[in-house]
Length: 277
Image 1 (spheres, rainbow, N blue to C red):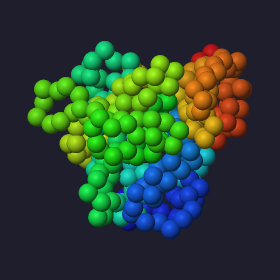
Image 2 (cartoon, helix red, strand yellow):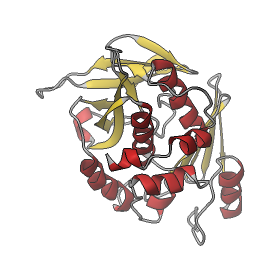
Image 3 (cartoon, rainbow, N blue to C red):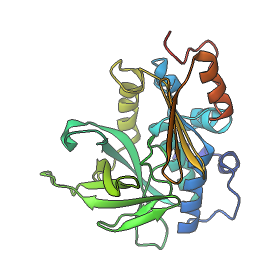
Image 4 (cartoon, rainbow, N blue to C red):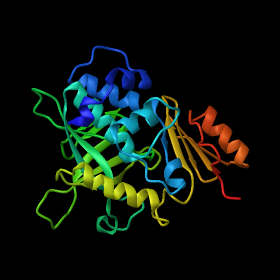
């Protein structure tokens, strides 16, 4: 409850550029979700320095709202959950297994955070997620309904039931690959509620473990109406809204710092090196 009490909704909405009458309804949920994704970048600069970022609400406001910084999934979705609760939504935190590139679901731990959101008077719950740092991420929340494709802004997603031996139904988020004209698995989850201490533990693991994908090379992304821009190590990838992909190698530290400043809206911490020498 303390996180809700300390949440400055006006400052958050100003940061993401959202204007309107705040209500706990579907239209607000969709538009705030999209504005958050386009307003705050995804980045791993703390983890790259082997620092587990704080998930305290006040620290998240200072970093993601009051500074030119972003964060990764636990930061984004913890902040977003606080905003939704301040708006009057009911939010359940979920743990998910990212399966992009995996040979099977069980080969990945539940290291991703997603949200199940319910609006007052609306019997339909929605999957929301502003912290999935990938081209297959949701732009807007989708109904928790199996087997139906949904268009969320410029992307298409669907939820399906995945084979599973456990006692709870396993859901899979899939994104439509425009080039291959096929559905691609993104992450799997059950509706078991996760609590903040659960994410504190996994946040420390992902932010400090030398084998974590986020401690080894820079990973930043931004989303606009026209494109998805990703810097992963030295590779800069621009995926345009029509599906065209343009890649190039970043030449060095000076260019990487310029890109973070001008293209991603991120201030690099003093003394930090982005690219290995």
